[in-house]
Length: 141
Image (cartoon, rainbow, N blue to C red):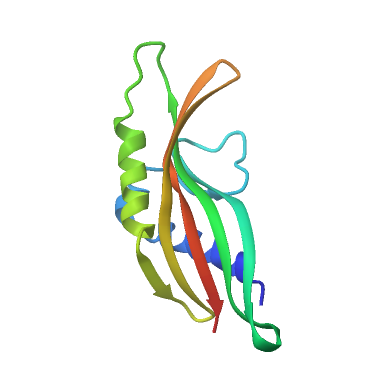
């Protein structure tokens, strides 16, 4: 089994299943977002991956890191208000930090390794990013 692909599906499903988070955003996107995707949204990017092996190349788990963040387009040239971006980041953290879960094919343990905030300017528009870098250890069942 490709634990990385399964872990990505698990993260998307976990976040999309939360009505509180979905009340704040218009969707959860893995890797890339369509240019016309409505914001705010959650974006998940894989950062790193490694497998842990024991005797006879028995794979214990995939050790993965993901940047999971809320993305908010700031509609004004006035001082930025991070309230919505922080609310999204807080909800992501409530769902993923110190989380253990299982679905039909995968056992997952996740925790935040570091927080993340950033702002970017694209096409003259300002985007606020808030979330964290999450370590996900995934074991195929």
